[in-house]
Image (cartoon, rainbow, N blue to C red; front, side):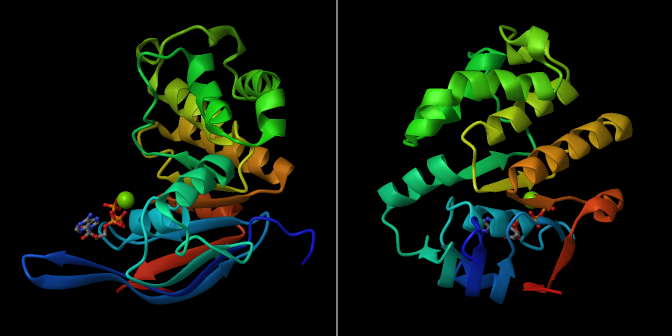
Amino acid sequence: MSDCIGLITLDHVTKAYEEGGITRTILRDVSIEFGCGEFVVLLGKSGSGKSTLLNLIGGIDAPTSGDVRIDGCSITRMSDKERTLYRRNHIGFIFQAFNLIPTLSVMENVLLPVELSSNERVQRDGKARARDLLEKVGLRTRLDTFPDRLSGGEQQRVAIARALANDPLVVLADEPTGNLDAETGRVVLNLLDTLTRQAGRNLVMVTHSEEVIGIADRVLRLKDGQLV
Ligand SMILES: Nc1ncnc2c1ncn2[C@@H]1O[C@H](COP(=O)(O)OP(=O)(O)OP(=O)(O)O)[C@@H](O)[C@H]1O
Ligand SMILES: [Mg+2]
């Protein structure tokens, strides 16, 4: 497995929230490994803990107990600062609501993760890489446009380019096609699949679209706090 990078391990992960003196356990003793260069789809009904699971993998949140590791390195045991660096250097996040920065142009949005990365190669090649990604998502002529001038599908394509700009080990996508019409959703999905496959990166995608299942390597379903 020496050439395998971006291996995600969840080891007896439990996540619970306290609410009004009551403990609600969202994820219950989840153990799983996501392989390298794998496209994993995460299904489950609303409130089943899909976003919670992505946030744990992405180091946005920490488990109540258990361990999350990437390439054997525990995210759980990192300090807040280390976890932030981990996120900036190794994770690409695509949010359901795009989350583009409105005051930055298309190009500047995509360059943001490059500037936050401490990887010298990413910084050196960042501009060329950002251009190349924006070309691939069909936005070469829109580099200086601001997000409010773009359609939903175009904004989502910027978000995809941005998520890949720091050459992450793992791309986490939370319902990336949820706000798009079927046709645009298909285009965005194929793009994401192609770009991560070309780079041999992991893609973990939350979706309600049964259509996506057809092109995924593995489909996991969250039910009663467990993956089935
Ligand atoms: N910070 C928090 N504090 C308390 N409860 C939370 C918190 N974050 C999430 N939850 C609860 O955890 C459960 C799972 O939430 P999560 O967002 O992971 O669901 P989901 O599967 O992504 O749902 P959806 O498909 O609607 O996006 C929900 O019941 C939610 O209320
Ligand atoms: Mg969610």
